[in-house]
Length: 398
Ligand SMILES: Cc1ncc(COP(=O)(O)O)c(C=O)c1O
Image (cartoon, rainbow, N blue to C red; front, side):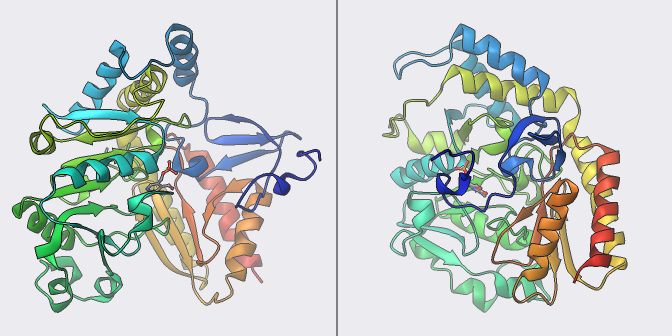
């Protein structure tokens, strides 16, 4: 079989909307006929500074030629430098850091390390948190996890001022919980932001009892929400932070970063974990370059401003149609929820129509939601073109 003729036969899982992408640069990808698409999904939330950023291309070539990979017993200065950069960004002076390859792995490493020292058996997380493709944080078995359903909090009139004193909060068995894993906003890709006071109440209760707060920043980190990290909207002090996706801007590098408090709790016990590419110099060099670019190009501020412009434009589109029921946004993490679409057919129609017009947005098949998580470098004229197409498509929607 020629896989180019029938790509669905050999690629598992996902519906393929375009199967001949041959080039990617900045915020665009291009197919074999030269059609360009604006990538408002950053691949899978990954290309934080755009596809094929010239400085990433340069460092990939330079570092690959110097040293791409070492063994467990050897390292390279670029790894320590990158670890220092990440510790500095997180204000974790005296902390530690390991570089890995995927977001799932970074979360799992943090969970595994936390379980070595937490005083109680359960980790607390939200029912709608996605934490990875495998492992304990994926399986969320009841003997290891307590899942808190905060759908009632979404409707609660006191959510904004919530300090966790209600009956629902009282159902959390803190006497059995040794850690809290927060996913600060992506909510399995549907973009919901748990209330600040609720998260503060969870985090402080866990830490007061000697437990650890872990934050999954795989989607929300590296400027996505208008701050370097999503937890910064919550005024909490995490102990372990998992990073991925945007850290490598398309290259597979992730990190688990430990605060000095977590390091004190772990002491000198090594986390038993052997993965061939942990702390590879190539991934380290890419991550350091992505941090440099975000800092030097002022992309946190730019992303915040671009997010505000996109949100204002979406609100204006919402005025022109009765099909949108909610727009949720924090920085450059936005979701448009369509109402009255029980079969999700309008959402699917809009998704496909946008692709045909050259705009890639995120869609979860079972939800009437389209998601935007573009690179921090998104240009003003691309926003305007997208908003115009969106407005027009709502007019044509069946
Ligand atoms: C919030 C969140 N955490 C973790 C992951 C896992 O990251 P990766 O796919 O790089 O393993 C994802 C992936 O989509 C995610 O959205």
